[in-house]
Image 1 (cartoon, helix red, strand yellow):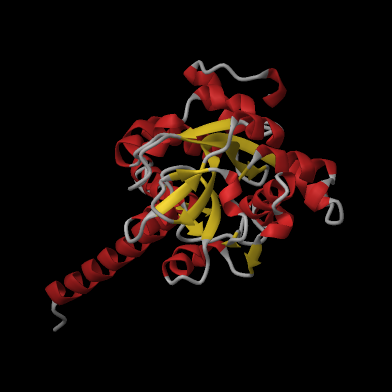
Image 2 (cartoon, rainbow, N blue to C red):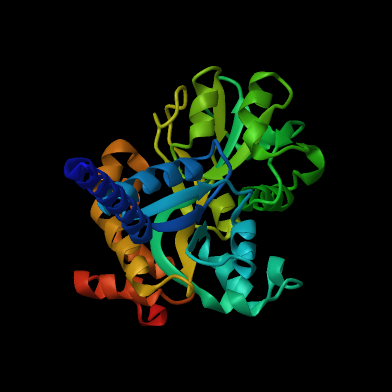
Length: 325
């Protein structure tokens, strides 16, 4: 005779297994994955990506997962808009988005209609130029670069800006440039392979902290006239930001914005933007650079906001420049 309890147990077992599979499938379908591309490993912007990924995960209860991808710089980030599908978020100075949309600069020979689909989300800490030399002076002037072997990286905003400054201040022929990626700067300086490196990142930047923790470093400070010559916004790195650098360092900076494209749906853009602002203070408690972010920095954005992001700003009562609508 058939055992009814064994049959019942078998039926219940199948039901529980089916329910478990259905629950797993439902969880997977409810989870939204977003690719976040920012900068190379070892830079402040890569670390910001790590912090932002965790903040979004916590703030959305795992509903949105940011997958961090290493990048060689902002131009690459914008270029990848041509091929990226789905939820792609990237960081870049607004000027590069403007160039991409206009088919100018680095994008003059790589024009693509998909650049017109770029949309803004929120600001992140500004890029700050760091000229780092071996030595215990703490702070020096730009003339100290003469005769030095420098690593400025390649393909990044920082590399292009460093090259421009060397040309601008008559040092282009007086400096030997190392052919290597910026990520190798700290080790190369510590090993005596170079005399200094240039990095563009928000402060305090991890690769300068790493270097200053193991050897004396000196930062280049620009005069008011030199800053005016660059045409870039002034930025002060407060004394004490890095070990051994006790005086303020006058340098330049560039705004940075997190962008996406029209491929992202409105609800995802809304939740990303909302969670970013709601978690900003918690992020600032862990890393000082987030404390510099204010809604006023939306004025630095080029292009238009994603409709989902705009919905959040309007709900939050944050003033949005007409040009971004």
